[in-house]
Length: 261
Image (cartoon, rainbow, N blue to C red):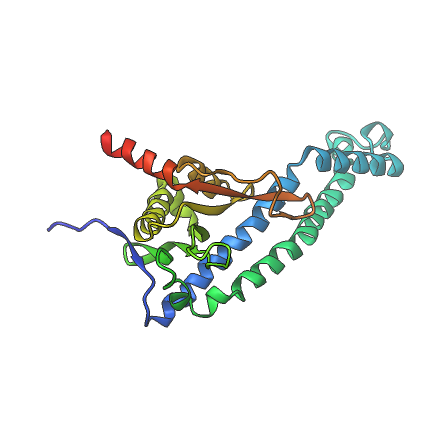
């Protein structure tokens, strides 16, 4: 008896399934809080913060006379060498707690703004227009594991025909990232945007240093930094989020190269 292997597919967001909308919001929320975890990890391994922790802890150990050479003569074996730990461990805990305490408000405020944005009120209606917009879900083995959303920027008096779109959301849950399935999802979203609306000349996205897997796949698809000025800075170490852009001619060239192989 043969067993069917799990299959993957990319499809639009359902118009009637309220549960899918909840899953979309959970994926977006999880993606937002991953930035907090990444910011905390980078803070914990920052050379400047580690040097500060070591200096303060050493000064405290010196003040308390906890160096091995300062211990009572009756202490034998390893006990004198374990004494300084009492000074280093508490300040390490302080460092870990302080990093999260300073970082968390930045990411929670950003997440709340994202979840309260116009597109989350009715995602299907929001991404139905203009032509080229859309929200696509990545299914694997009947489970939603990722999403990508593209919104064509609204026309203005200066540009009555919209020529730019934005990758507003893009995420894949962690267990599936090593297979680079996120690249297939991104390519699908870009293909739908460029092919559905011939007036689109560029797609913009956020180049987030705290999200290396999306940063990498954007670069692989040809996105380049659009402006030297960051869109915003996140966390107490002020990590930068920049805008990057993929032009239609670059996309067409890459697609021609792929088809020619």
